[in-house]
Length: 214
Ligand SMILES: Nc1nc2c(ncn2[C@@H]2O[C@H](COP(=O)(O)OP(=O)(O)OP(=O)(O)O)[C@@H](O)[C@H]2O)c(=O)[nH]1
Image (cartoon, rainbow, N blue to C red; front, side):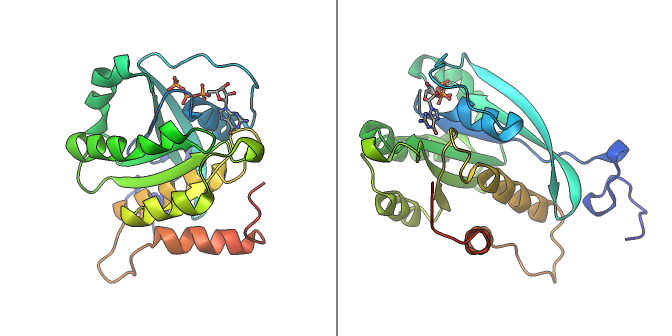
């Protein structure tokens, strides 16, 4: 494109790399928010190292979205109840929310409704929400079936996938889908078709041979 506006997403150079508005990770303590972010950012998983997040952590990662490098800002919140008032303060500025439960923990799944109530109370009404069932590698300890996650997501009209911070399955896809949605919202032209996050996720799944989660 002709770059009359260097800061435009279409015209980005490394020097003018545009930044997407923040994405925030939320969910009960121990569901794997920090691990998911470490897997996405550094491509690694450190087993057995559970140190609960205190307050909030910030990570920036540059990824290619539609062949343009874009900086994604991710805020990792503490799941523990005692940090709730700190994390609420950040909801308002978040444009996207990855809401996690642990597929081996029924309580973390049951709490999703309470998280969504909280999100609707504190976040902007048009925030992008994606539901993630994490620890998908732990199939022998599974407490929540995939279709239960899918049903809950359908009820709230949010996209859903199972992820594993350990094996990395669907980790890039989750963050990339959200980044694409945020970018498309930022550069939406009136006569361009609207980006459909559900369709994008399905298409990527089919491309990768689909349906094997592990
Ligand atoms: N097998 C497996 N273990 C995981 C996965 N994700 C996280 N874990 C483990 O679960 C524990 C908790 O992970 P964290 O990433 O610290 O959880 P968190 O949601 O950030 O917790 P808070 O910071 O307290 O909110 C750690 O022992 C991780 O190694 C996963 O996908 N598979």
